[in-house]
Structure formats: structure tokens, C-alpha cells
Amino acid sequence: MPYISVNGVRKTYEGRQGPVEAVSSANFTVEAGEFVSILGPSGCGKSTVLMMLAALEKPSAGSIAIDGAPMTSPRRDVGLIFQDATLLPWLSVLDNVLFPVRIMKRDMAAHRAKALELLEMVGLKDFRDHRPAQLSGGMRQRAAICRALVHDPHLLLMDEPFSALDAITRDEMNLVLLNIWQKYHKTGIFITHSIREAVMLSDRVLVMTRRPSTIVSDITIPFSRPRDPDIGDSAEFNAICRTLRHQIEAGHRHEREAA
Amino acid sequence: MSDAQVRQDLMGASPQGRRRVRRSWPFPERIVLPILTPVVLLLIWQWAIGYFNVPPSLLPAPTVVFERLQETFPLLIGHAWPTTVESVLSFALATVFGVGLAILTVYWRLFAISMYPTIIFFQLIPKIALAPLFIVWLGIDMPSRLAFAVFISFFPVVIATETGLRSTPPDMLRLCTALTATGWQVFTSVRLPYAIPHIFSGMKIAVTFAIIGVIVGEFISAQKGLGYIIIFASSQADTALILAAIFLLCVIGLALFGLVALAERLARRRYGFA
Image: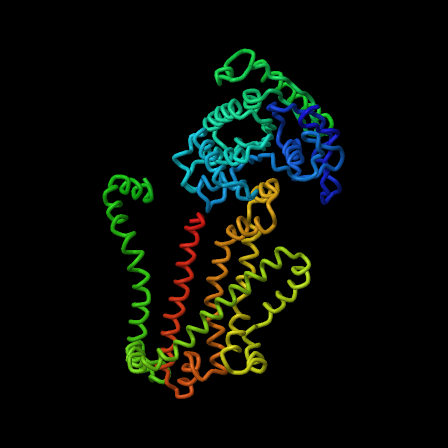
């Protein structure tokens, strides 16, 4: 049985001019330990899919099950990363990383060691007593990654976590994430609109289109792990990117014809 | 070549000259100018009193006011004390009351819907006009002045706190929900700290309103306080004493406002908003 199964999920919001369809239909499964990207243009409903996976939004129709249990309320074995780091400005980096532990009232002392290990892994150990305002955007997002991992969740949900960062920092963050994946073996859903980022990080890429906002293809990325970032220069990598780009463009054409 | 161009070329040609002007200005201008303005105004006042032969009962010269302040200083300090204490007390009460009301309106929708129009209505009537009613209801002692000063000053705290409590980034609230945080945890460790800068901006307005409320209360009922001194002095046509009392009031107001502003700076630094 797959770890995550999304069956016929639809989401409509009540807008001022009648219902607005955010997600028409989503069907996919994710195996435990897989890293799956949902790739699509902005406004295609990919973030809504993620919010439903986190049980922060309720599907209007269809069902989501994680680990065999229907997803009706937030689970504690899920870690979330947003586009902005959303750290609390009055807490040190370390205390921000430990925030989930405090909320869940778990053993602080035991998790402190875990938090420091994570901070060291992302190169923030020397900044553990700094405030978020003293860090760069990339450093803040690294702290947010540590916070998402500190309570050892099975599933990591990432909503365009690097799209607010500059290109160089973004490449750096991809490396950080690849390393984390190598070390901690999580299951991950990664929302992005960057084709290269999706191919670099994922085991599978799901392409989502607008109108209808649905998943149009499911492509397996053949590169083995651990991955060297240099695979980005290989012909095979670029061929996959081209295929994905064509699928997104086909979606655009389809949308224009429908309009 | 146009004049503007010539000027531009000249300035470009002598950057040293420009720099000298800039370097000598910023520091003194921030300190000297704010002091210079009142000093000049006082000098004009002093000069005009003599020049136009204004009688002291109408407007005494600053030097006369200062002399009167020195003569009556022990008396004035005795009256400044209750005014200060009552201002501080009513400001503290207004803050607690305002923050409490804001929390209720944010967390209890029915309360917000049922109370808000009434609260707004009371803001629209000239509140000073209600001061005599407080005397009728609560008597002429401190409780009635405190109640009136709280009544006049709590509203900015409500509005500011409410804005603050609603200013938490939505993703932060989503994260809390995803972590299955309780409402109390979200309130104490996220929403309230996020509201702190807003609460302080409400408090800065409330502190000045609280002083106004206490003075108005003293105008109509008190047997002591600077408001009482002002009314008493005006019945004696002692304009210099009125102005001396007002001067002391300004000092008290500045000191209280300064303390709130200082507390705000410390809190902002403590909470990482600076």
C-alpha cells in the first residue's frame, strides 16, 4: 500500500462570483521514502494540494490517506516548510528550531541535541544564538528546514521553499536538501515552479496545469542517490527538463484554446 | 549653457565645498534646531510683551512665569503629585482594559459583533461632555477621575491591540495548526508577542489621553492637583501661576510619554522587532 494516496481530490472556494475551482482533480500516490515534486505554473493549485495534504484545508470532494489513515486533522509526524521562513523574530535560531518540540511538549533536553545536530548539518551551528533578523534569507530558510525536521517527522511538506531566494542561494539550498535526504530518509512532497530544481531533487515529478487544474503527467527521475549536483550538466538531465517544459507548454496551449 | 548647468558643473567641480557643508550640519542640526525653535519663540514672546505693553494679567512674560514657578514650586510639586499618580494609574488601567477588550473582540466573534457598534458610538460623542456625569455617578474623589480618564484613553489601546493580534503572518498560524498547537499556546507564544509593537503605539496615545482625562476631572471636582491649581489661579486672574502649572504639566506629560517610549524600545529589542 502506498504511504500517501490522493484519490479524486477536488477543492472549490466560495468566491464572490460563484465557486472558484482551485483543484479540479488530483490523483496520485507516493511511496514511503520517495521525494516527489509537484511542478506547475503559479495559480495551478499545487499549493492547495499541499495544504490539503497537511490537513490545513479540507478537500471539497475525494479523499487523502497517509499511512493508511484518512487525513482529516493535522498529524504530528509531518514537517512543514513555507516560501518564507516564518521564524519568530523574538526567538534565537535554536529556540525557533525547537519551537515544534515546545508546542508538542516533548523532551526539550533530548531534542536540543537533535536541533544542534541539524543546525550543524546546514552550517548554522555558530548562529544558534542569533536572532532571525541577523541572518540572510538563505540562512533563515535553513533554520526553517531544521525546525521542520526537529521532531523527526516521516513526511516533509515543502511549499516553494526556495522561490523567494536568489539563484545562487537556491542552488546552495538544493544541495543542503539533497544532503538531508541522504542522511534522514524522509518522504517528501515538494512544490515548485522550477523545472531544474524539481529534476535535481526528486525521485518523481508530477506536472500540474491550470484550467483544468489537474496532474497531467508523472515522470520518474532515473538518477541514483547520492546525487552529484553536476548531473545538472548532463544530457540526460537536460532531456528530462525539455520533456517537462514541453508538457507545461502543452498545458498553456490547452488553456489558451479553452479560454 | 544654462544657469542650472553652470551651477551643476560648479558643484561637480568642487565636491570639497559640498562635503564641508554636509559634514558640519547633520550633527548640530539634530540637536541645535529643536532647542533653537522654542528659545526663539520664548525670546519673541519676551520681547513682544515689553514692546506692546501687554498687562501681566493677560499674558506675563516668560521671565515672570519662571519667577512665579520658583516662588510657588513647593506648592506646585505638592499638587503635581496626585495628578501624576492618577495619570499613571488611569493609563495602566486603560492599557489592561483596552488589551483585554481587544482580546475579547479578536477571539469572541459574537462579542465583537454585539459590542463594536456601541464602543464606536461612544467614541463619536465628545467624551469631555460626559465628565460631569462621572462626578454625578462616582462622586468628586479619585475613583471618578480615574474612571473618566480610563474612559477617555482606553480606545486607542483596543484598536492598536486588535490590529496587532491580527498581524500574525498567516503561514505562522498555519504552522501552529499543523503542529497541533492549542489556542492558548498560539495566543501566548505567537499572537500576543506579535502584537507587542502595536500595543505600544496604542499605549503612547493612551498616556497623553489619560493626562487630559485627569486634568479635566480636576477642573470640575478636585481640591488638589494641577488642574485644580489652574482653575484656582484663573479665578484669581493669576495668569503667571496658570502658565507655571501648565509648564509643570508639560514636564510630567513628557516624562510619562518618554517612559512609555523607552519601554517600547526595550520591548522591541527584546522581541526582535527593532
